[in-house]
Image 1 (spheres, chains in turn red, green):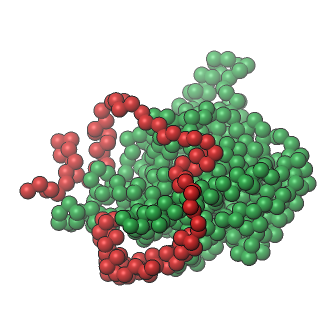
Image 2 (cartoon, helix red, strand yellow; image 1 turned 90 degrees about the vertical axis):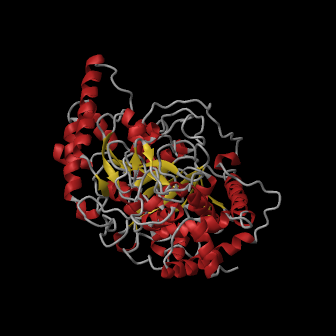
Amino acid sequence: MSLAPQDIARLANLARLELQPDEAQRLQGQINGFFELVEQMRAVNTQGIEPLAHPVAAIQDIALRLRPDVVSEPNQREANQKSAPAVENGLFLVPKVIE
Amino acid sequence: MSNDLHNLSVVELARLLQSKAVSAVEAAEHFLKRMDAHQHLGAFVSVNPEATLAQARAADAKLAQQAKASSSESASPMALTGVPIAHKDIFVTRDFPTTAGSKMLKGYQSPFDATVVSRLAEAGAVTLGKLNCDEFAMGSANENSAVAPVGFDAPVPVRNPWAQDRVPGGSSGGSAAAVAARLAPAVTGTDTGGSIRQPASFCGITGIKPTYGLASRYGMVAFASSLDQAGPMARSAEDCAWLLSAMCGPDPDRDATSLDRPAKDFSRHLNDSLEGLRIGIPAEFFGEGLAPDVRAAVEASLKEYEKLGAQLVPISLPRTELSIPVYYIIAPAEASSNLSRFDGVKFGHRAKDFGDLTDMYKKTRAEGFGDEVKRRIMIGTYVLSHGYYDAYYLQAQKIRRMIADDFQQAFQSCDVIAGPVAPTVAWKLGEKSADPVANYLADIFTLPASLAGLPGMSLPAGFGADGMPVGLQLIGNYFGESKLLNAAHRFQQATDYHLRTPEATRP
């Protein structure tokens, strides 16, 4: 398989990346080169093999824990918003999304 | 004494601090001065001497208090009180900005400390500053950092203290360079596909990545969450054992993948005999791709292990080569998901000119991310997209299990596994950046243990072409950190590679 320019454009849109034409072209070549490297993996027979997400699950049962859904943190609005690009009255500002 | 502090180990420094022969402030000032004098290496991306010295004064107060409390039995045996360390700039810190090597996080000030950072602070360590790394830890030469190091106005490559026209390795390149140049006795790093072991190897120092889940990932800027692990880098295995003991431990409320295993003292078995230790030698790690100089150094160190009483056992890790595509599917997939949080809304960079919200996202991310990061986001987006998920991501996760099973098979006939860390010594700056995808192949020996979540380390094993350091990789079974550190420590008792200092950074 080989990705065409329109595939790159579709992925860039999904990934929310604006690509310059030369950048898109360069990425197309590199990504196609990458998928040649990946080809050998697709041929492996993995029938009946369970995917491994937490690596230690290879030897023991791993339950990803959930914590109780309760407030555990103090209010740190100011500290949390210190690195925000645009804030007003304690709210994050974004371009208008509702007409 | 005090003008030679940088040549002391963590353990020696800790003892001097406990005995008050040196104060924490003296130690911090000594290293801050050294960091200043070696800015050309590009190892540090941020310093804050006031914060460092405030931490040091607090450490001195703690030491004074301990002395008063009881003279016979003061601190815990492995207290790091007053020991200066530095953090890879991927751990968030309150006292220093955190960039993860990216323009996206320029000037980002975290409201909290990463768990690893606060655990080391609780053990008494003093932070000297933050260390350069590849952007979001993606890279193996530290050439992907988008951040200007301390003393520079623009990003420049980190230099390998052993040969300043060479790379330090990556992604924890600043970490490795700082220890090699004696700018810090020990540092933190993170390892997703080899980012502690490979730079440790390239810079002639010691580093260990523990079993996945032992060190909390809370506050570590996420790259690939099912692979990312924190670990220490220092000159010796003994120093690594001290730091690792302080770093690890359960973090049940903040990291869902943190394992429920109590913190432990990883230095207790350092001196155990290696008599009868079975070291597995995977045939696949010694194939054609291995440079002759690296092979020679690794084979010589294996002979040293035989002298120490270990026996070498041939083993096979048949899917070693497959670990490259498997890793480079899984890691970008997780990265594309993790990095979706950088949207220019709650923190980080935002583009200046944009139209609607989607345009703001696209321009912000186009400006904020570097080439390697964009490449991986694109690959990750593709392999997770509708119609391709099963063929790529799920297939990779299945082979990942087969790779982990291969290790379990191998560990039936050996206690630890040994081989090279990387196929070559450190290459020259700029030499390999032309073909980024071809560079992925050089990660072949570190990726298998990463995918399996096994502990792995690199220790200095001699020198190769042009006097560049070569690392020996040791891989342990799950929770086998103590055994790895024991094997490394005994080797370091019998050799002096880990004590050698790059000429350019003396005295």
